[in-house]
Image 1 (cartoon, one colour):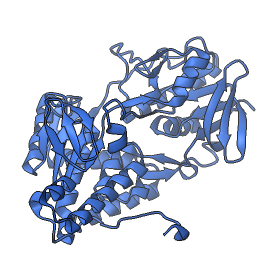
Image 2 (image 1 turned 120 degrees about the horizontal axis):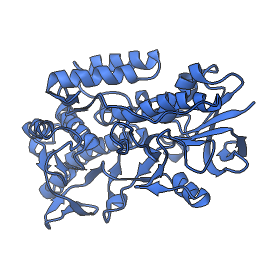
Image 3 (image 1 turned 30 degrees about the vertical axis):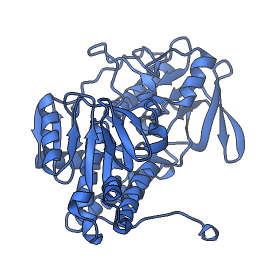
Length: 425
């Protein structure tokens, strides 16, 4: 039975597998390969940082999301190589190396964090790409508050309580808003920590926050953060990150023991390997594909999502690497795969974004819907309604709804989770 193999369990890969449930040609088998047994709902990572929801609810098991009818086979493994001539995928699984044959191969493995382009950033900052990153940042906040209570040196106390966020895009603004609200809510449990000893700073190189949105919305987000005590540094770049401070481009030093990096991505190592081995064309670290998402000169190979540079037929420009576009690309590619297998002409991808939304902390947000600006509580409610509708499985939707209702009336959870075996304690 010929295989349609999808590599990657992110937004694009999962949506493609779901779409193919209704569109896969008779006689074909769908195989999904992912190195994790779960898919991560990245828009909620900042809420996990702020303890608005439990970290485990940011992920969903792939086997639960895709039942046997939708995904004939799920393989948990890391893809090591692709043989385009023999049409096989080599992956490393729990049972060792495994060769998976394919007739059609879709690359949807995303990208990875790139936090080593600033000296010291990789060693002394926290990225925010996975649920593990979110849990580590949350634990770091709790560790720092506990340290402040025990520290007697005033200068050290202020450095311990200073949280610096590098980047003023969606992730940076959202995590800064969550951090400042979380700190305000849980400080009551640390009576020896004074209000002026904890603060959040956002360092952003642009003229306004959220450059993807209208400038007025970036200004609205800035004002919302400033009103709650966040120090927003615009047109400012970090030149170095050290163990106890952040060096800015103008020479100023920010004494801070916790730095969160929300900027910078780099190609997945698999993309770099395949580019060299199969002579794929990479641009800005993404695989260059044709308008229908096929990989030029490699029959039966396609790519979508963050790992691919997909041209949008509406304007000829590359699609932005966002979840909204990855989902639309997946649905379009499902149709193209069916057309291709049936011997019909495929269609170029074209999509006009509905809008973009960002939260700026509890009950505050900004949105741009069909070009119309929206801010404050309505934007925040729209954000929650939209992403709740996008959550996989009814069970996850119900759990998130209950947690959001709970956090409206009760403070954030302050449990510091440490996963250690009993013999290591």
